[in-house]
Image (tube, rainbow, N blue to C red; front, side, top):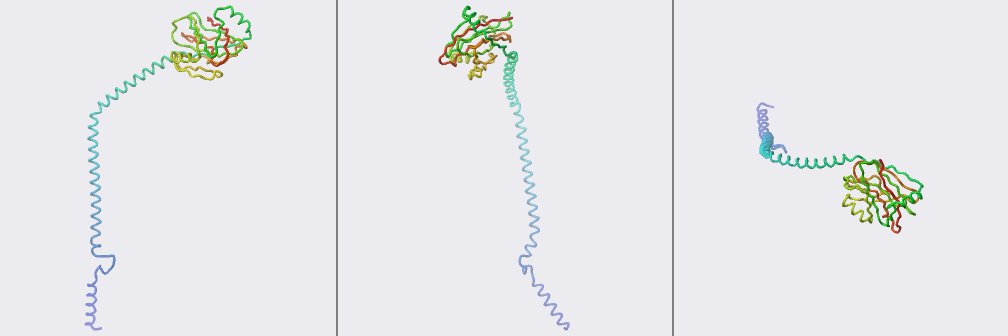
Length: 274
C-alpha cells in the first residue's frame, strides 16, 4: 500500500469516528451522563435543606411549647391552692375515719360465754314457778328480748332457762351504749317488729338459719356474744355466764319466730354475780 492509500484510509477512519455519538448506543445519552451527577447532588442538597428546615420547625415548636409551659406555670399557684383545699377536705374525712377507728379501738373484744347444761329440769321449773315473772309464754312467731344492764357492784351476768315440750332459740348480744336505766326489762314482739326496731336502733340485721345461728348485727354499738341457736331446753336446763366487757346492756333473745303453730312455755332467770 502506498503512502497515498494509507493517508486516505486514515482520513476515512477519522471521519467515521467523528460521525459516532453517544446516541448510537441505546440507554445512554450525553444528556443523561452529564445531568445525573448534578441531579443527585441537587437532590441531596434539597433533602438536607428539608431536614434542616424540619429541625428548625421542631425547635421553633419546642420554643413555643416552652413559652406556653412557662405561661402555664404562672397559673400554677392557683391550681396549687385548689389542690391544698382538696387536701384539707381529705384530711377532714381522714379525721372522721380516724375518730371512728378510735371509738372502735376503745371497745375491747368480747369473750365467748361460759355455757353448761343440767338434767335438773324438774327442780328448776318447780323453783321458778314460785318466783314472779319467771314463767312466760313465748307465742309462735314472737321473740322475747331481756335487757340486762351492767352494774358497778357486779362483774358478770348469769342465766338459766328451760321449756316445756319443745325447743327454743337463744342468743346473746351486748349494747355498748351508756346505761341510763339499771332495771332489767323484757320486750316481746313479733319477729318482723323486732327486726324493724333493730334496723332503726341497732343497724342492719341479716336473718340467717336459726339452726346455724342468726341475727348477725352490723351496728358499731351492738356486738354479738352468741348468735341465736335452737336449744334443746325441753330436754335439759341450759345455763351460762359472761364477764362484763365494760358498761352496757346485755340482750338475751329467746326466739320462737321459726315456729308457725306452737307456743313455748319458758322458765328462765337472770342474775348477777360478783
